[in-house]
Length: 302
Length: 245
Image 1 (cartoon, rainbow over the protein chains, first blue to last red):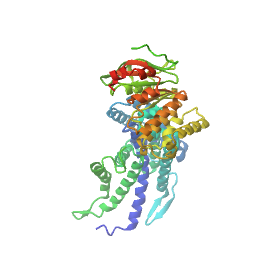
Image 2 (cartoon, rainbow over the protein chains, first blue to last red):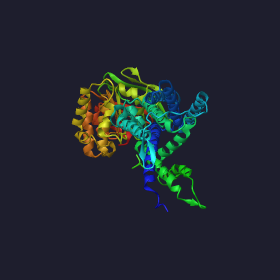
Image 3 (tube, rainbow over the protein chains, first blue to last red):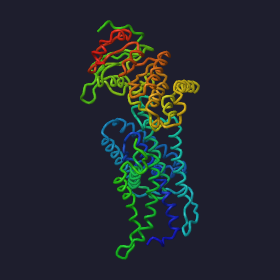
């Protein structure tokens, strides 16, 4: 029954899947980096994403420059993240993980309500910095979407190089593998934690600004994204950076294809609504947890 | 206790250390000292608190009472990374090398610190690669793929990257083949010649007596006996008494 799906739709959905997958990967890599190094599940990650988007709006309104907004928002939220880590999470190190969940959840509520109070309930919009389009079969496809995917890939690539070759990257990986031994080697582990949290927060903010033009910016926008990011972090294997990135793309592609497929499934003579495709990430999550609870992309347990 | 042996200028002095794991009282007032450039053995049966003593000196475990002095200054309660930077290095019993990091990256965890010149880094690397040629061969290999003996060499080489004044060496020969054991013995001798002090925890009594100048014997979380190794080599009654060997 799926044989008559036009292949141009498949190409379009593949492009869409990769674009959303890359931006999701940007959110998820910060989340998984933070989890990997300090076992903290950061429930405020979506709100850092939201805060990044709002700071982007403010900078664009004052300066008119999207690129300045991207840089300033990333740096500001990285600093806010560092401050949050020092004041809230550092004192909880070594305690029950539940305390950090409650702490980050508390931060998320504070940030959300602050945004609601300060910016109001009406969604804001970020104007995309480039408005060019190209023809993709019968669609006019905005170049900006391609740019988002490329920039996300560049930021993630930069993070990878930093982790792989930089001294601080080695400190971060050593701390992720063995916190106690890292300390014994003279690595200032508390500061490594702070820096990683700042990097994760900055990446969330960058994705908020980048994705801003495609979605309305409001105080609750973080919820959807962080939920999906949590799913890919679990599917990719908690704390596994490469796994999260692969899972982001996999889940986004599956969701994009499902949008087409559900239209070919008839229930009572009516095709299913494409909106049903949103369940795909959850199905992937459940199947992963049932059959490979350590994640799809974990080669061998440490 | 026989007359306490004379010691050189003290580098690490541990006084009346009490440590708890949860509610269990592990160290009941451990006191010992290691002189500058001295190799000191710490013997005792399993579970008497030898490893805990090392971890407490390193700041990895918090003591509830007592002090650790390094070069005359208290380091008790200081975070472990600051203690490491002062010049105390730690080679744990289970080696704990960073398994997913390459051999070179494992060494860089100790080597890449502020205030060390590039030339000095190369010199330190050259030295450990000379002592442990196998590490040079495997410098791009992940630490987890090394054999047990190679991992032990890496753990010692990594500690040497900190240019420590003392190395806390916890059962370095445990589970190693005889050929590896003699290599470890050799490196302890080399470090001693270079003036690095070592606090050596071992089950291997002959090796400890050969490598160290003084020995402390622990029982039930405290030091029960203290003697010069020369004395123990002649009269091993206390060794039999406390270790049953």
